[in-house]
Length: 252
Image 1 (cartoon, rainbow, N blue to C red):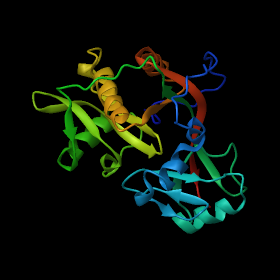
Image 2: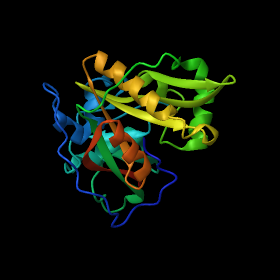
Image 3: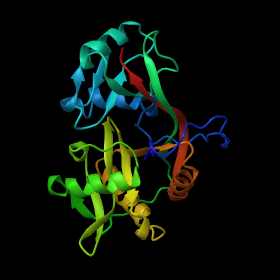
């Protein structure tokens, strides 16, 4: 989850040092350092647009652009070739600075969390599978709660589930980035009137259960200022692994 539009960039935010999260056997956590790139060359390669240096999802799937190595000067020419000039883009885990002539529109400090042995996921019998027919309601829920980017085809990236009350979709969560051995839980969102009922936690545990059933492990992202959500995920059994950054950039 990444409440990108609700939070201002945190300067000198005070958080405890990241713990060394236990690493599940046979799952290489180092690829999470560049999770979007690995997703676009592995589990989500079928969605990828770009070349050997830069890849992105289609604009109606996810707004992210990832690079194999942002320090490679050739990357920026590849970005222009991919998206064109005078375009706004979102860099997933991008560099601390952009080249001269490029404009950084905003930056969001984030936290990456990974599951630990303390996570005890369970399937939820009430969780409803969401699909194409539910997209208008999913987009509406995201617009009201701003858990992070969610586009008309984001639901194609993985399994999405939700809860309904009186026929209305009031909470949802699902899978976004998918890479070898790992899947990201994202779009965790609950309408205001239904918060503090444990709905988000139930959905996270359901999504994590099905991720583990495939033999994968779960990870998440949260805005660093969203300390309430981070604490909730830690109570469920996730541990903070790394800082990450999301950057909005204007291509010259």
